[in-house]
Image (tube, helix red, strand yellow):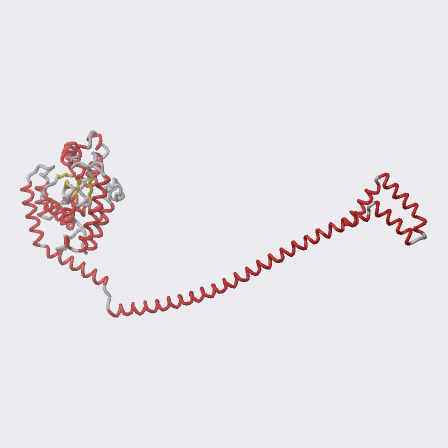
Length: 425
């Protein structure tokens, strides 16, 4: 952000159900930067709410922390209370993050923003930002009918909500804002769009055709006022809207409007005892919900002590079991090591036996080959003839003739091989 325009922040204000989603969609179509994380669409608003989810969440939590309701004025002194002090840096961080991401003017809306305008004014009036306020206005009868239809809220409560939020928006901005009437989108859409472009500074970024940009935004079916016949009962709502409906854009009779706003706020202050009583009732209910008697606390402490003792016993049992498992693990490792050593020893012995068997087999084969050799047979015939005369001496010439034949024909080697194989088998 290097120029003054990109530091602007468009803040859309409204009492609720006043066409802010339509306004945000129109501004987005004309170049305003929208937040990426939006509240998703729903049956109540199928076109989308166009509300920054993080800002909405902070607003909701702040209401809870302050012990208030969306339809009630905030407790006195809320701005200096701890919840507001905690929410302020969180909102400031969101603002700085959105501005750092924006390459044009960024804007946001949430009906609760009106309630927290004093807090937002402190954040937006810090160096580096220029707030541009837009008040979305709509006939209070249409607002009441819409809330009755969507969330079944009583019209009498809706009228007070419309009056409270509308006067707060004008009071805290000193009416230094641009007023957009929902109904004008269906009677003078292009004139209103051009005025918005100039007032917000978006005309420096938007170079397109406004009519083309808004052709899919302004839909005739969105104008539901023609179907509603509810009549407003609160005279101050009627009085304020009677003046407000003549105020459009940024050029209107502020003095007349603010005089009526002052009158309405004074009248509401005269009845603030009712909402103070409601806030006290809410506060008492919260305290009763969160508080317990001494006996209940003692009972809870006793139960916690029993639970703690049971957990300690379970912890000791687990510790003992772990110790036993460690001893077993050591024993198993020792047994495993001994088995491994025994296995190695057996393998070594098996290897030695295999070597001995191999040597024995080799010796046996050598003996068999020697026994069937020609020299051994010749020596055997001679030795038998000399040592055991008689039959061996008489048959010696025959044995020698057979040996000679085997040598000459080679038959002897074949017979020797057969003899060796038979001996091995």
